[in-house]
Figure 1 (cartoon, rainbow, N blue to C red):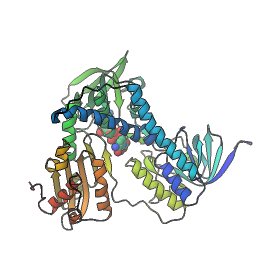
Figure 2 (cartoon, helix red, strand yellow):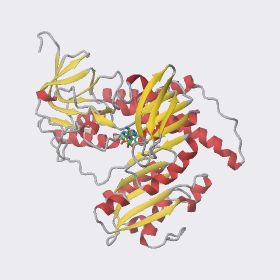
Figure 3 (spheres, rainbow, N blue to C red):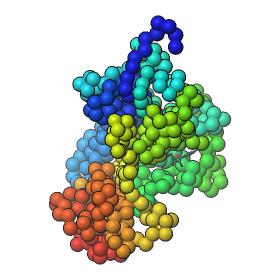
Figure 4 (spheres, protein in one colour):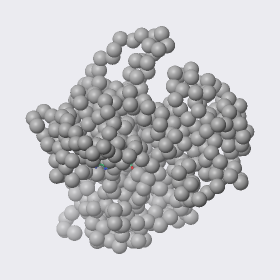
Length: 472
Ligand code: NAD
């Protein structure tokens, strides 16, 4: 430490103010611990709030509005084609983000959580060096690392830096490209691809694996794939990116299709969304006893404590799935463990939602995972084509699917594809957490007419026959 540099003492130092870090800090403060929250960005909220989940949802809402208006012609209501005022759209998106960031700031102030803007790095197991902040060092009793993740890059030889944007840049809406190439048909690629398609871009997708949204249940992906086929210019699965080079205003991209043909096309913009990687480097972990695995994830126990007992890690940096709600839950666990409570992370199900249109939501086991585990299961499906509400919305393409244990009928997994599936999945998570059976769901009275009834009917289908559909 340099003499004269300002050092602050705190009970809990949290590094990273995303949905993992700020939740951990707030819980720690609520438990009476003096807490300092450090983030290099000028606003708290992390990638999720500033340049990920929240701005993408604001833009997906706009895309949804535009599609709904366009499709209203089928119901006898004609709207003129929309005109997009990009500047105004950006301002609105920013206002959504700012409002939430300011909310976090206000909550931090009320809780007396000290916010420091700066880049933190461990000097030892008790001390952080903070660059760029008004404090040079923070001495802590406990620390929680919540530094998140960053977008993975493709090798420079395949995708040079001047040829592409990542999801954060894409969500800044630099322009609306006439032709957009999306590399990677996962959550981010498809969500942002749909936003740009709604705004007028012709979207082409190149995905390395044989299908879009690898890992998700086939039955759930099918209705989404059918809609994307109409919205996107082309979707190349099982394709291999060969090279890209900037040619003035456009990027020339070569890729090999699954049939072995090589395609060369020019795009006005390229979005690379091929996954994310943990931000565990450059944290000075070598000055502590914290260990990381081969992929860079910090190793933690059930309480989210690292191998350095004063230091905890949560969220994307501490392992998959890289989801904001998992990070927040871990933040609460870590803060409680530091406060001496017997808290561990033992969630039975973590929901995952792609906020595409239709949304794809799931929790627990998929049918394929249950088969891999050799489980005896019964699958109940309820097609939304038999849901009054889905038909009334003009969106009957959805499906609700329940995987139950054969003997006990205990719910092992639920998948839903359809409008607002992400809002419906919470009931399924609760069912799995509570060890509910298909009968519990089937006997729970659901409001009519809502798409939540499809959960009840899929459960009825596990038990025999759903009222509004016959088992095939
Ligand atoms: P992802 O893992 O969901 O999808 C990446 C896709 O890129 C995969 O389909 C993969 O096969 C493909 N890919 C990889 N290398 C490729 C290559 N060289 N060429 C073509 N395709 C290639 O990752 P993502 O969409 O970038 O999202 C990153 C993380 O963020 C995920 O862990 C996800 O859980 C999280 N996330 C979640 C949400 C949500 O919950 N709605 C939204 C956005 C992101």
